[in-house]
Length: 87
Image (cartoon, rainbow, N blue to C red; front, top):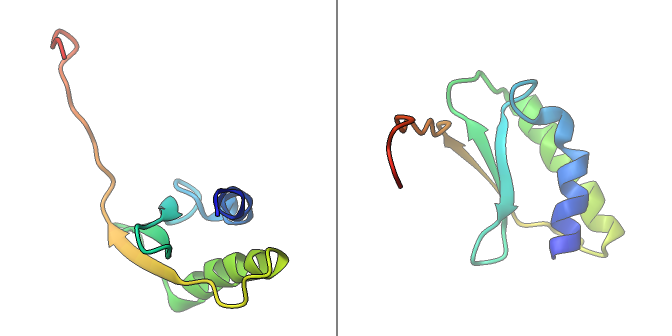
């Protein structure tokens, strides 16, 4: 599965932030692929279908006929820690 994730990551790289809406990509505990979409960007169905098609095409090269894929809208986490803070 890790090889599939890494290969798919390359396939969807044109959709990564800031050029695209994708801010994260991984598998969840149930084995589904999770694509995290920046909720501040306008995303239409066409873009979602394009991303899903790329993942599905890569799945076929790994003999996966039906890639379980979930799209999640989420914000970008901005961690603001003052420079003089000791962690």
